[in-house]
Image 1: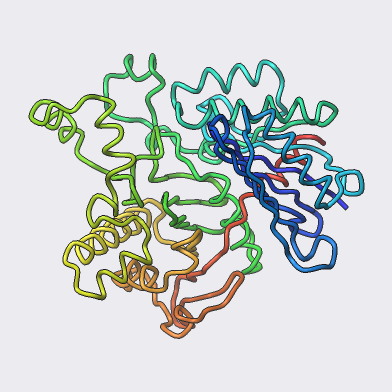
Image 2: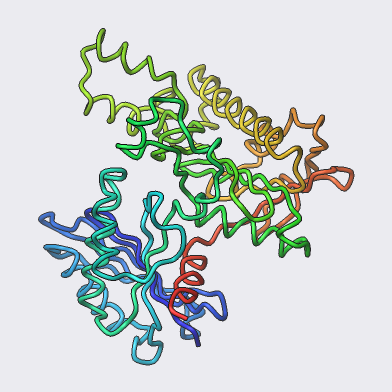
Length: 402
């Protein structure tokens, strides 16, 4: 059994998964949250496939002073509820890190120098990298004899050509402050594009692909021969598609005007665009299921928000078809992409000129796993591909330790 522990840390929480890479199945998952608050929470789920019994979740409430204490809670859960880490010893610990800048373009064994690099890049991801670093250091204390590997969300997009990653601002200022497009969700885009090629039985190097990762955060990537050549998120995860609470693309002058006329500070503008915009800003709800229900009930704001969301998806689909010179495969993944037939149907509805034709019955079918939703006559194969970022992180972690 080839087991890897995957850790995804934030500033006040971390998720974990014990994963059998060889069999591509999770043995246990968990969440430790409210770290540093008066009452912390932990949940530990032993999956049915781990020990042959029914899936069961165990919860605890207690103060959790820091990430190190959180890892002690996690280890206690494994010891008390299983699976036993002595019987299923992890070969390595893989850490999801959001921002690797232009420095890290592959899974990287963590050393003190790498930790320093992740810390230095916190200026580009102040909400993400510091929490990841706290998790790394706590995990190193809990598993001092194991290799620890950082897998960066930005790494897959390091193949972007200069024309795609360069912003048209003063070049010296951009260079000094590392202003460029980095792209995110790279782990998911890589996994889905490779899974699509495998499912179709075609060489990855021959395929022109467009992958829509649609969740509360959303991005789209154009992939040519397995290489990211264009992606919607930019220097931060704020650019691009309309998201649950993020605005996506917006005229930069809007911020200047709001600062001047509404007297909004930098912090207030940051909060507006990241936490009070997107579907939430337009319609008061950030969940696509709630939005669709409100739209079906005749809520005008919800109808407009859904129209704006679809409009942006179509715009990016058209742009990426142009960048690639056409597409062989278009894939939908993540919470909305995998489960929302209306979004898939409407975002592809105007692409008949490019050979895209959705089969209504296939699109509406409630099935699991990778599946085709295009018609037999479609010149472009359209897929639903469930993402598995933890498995991809585990694979890359093992790759880095060999």
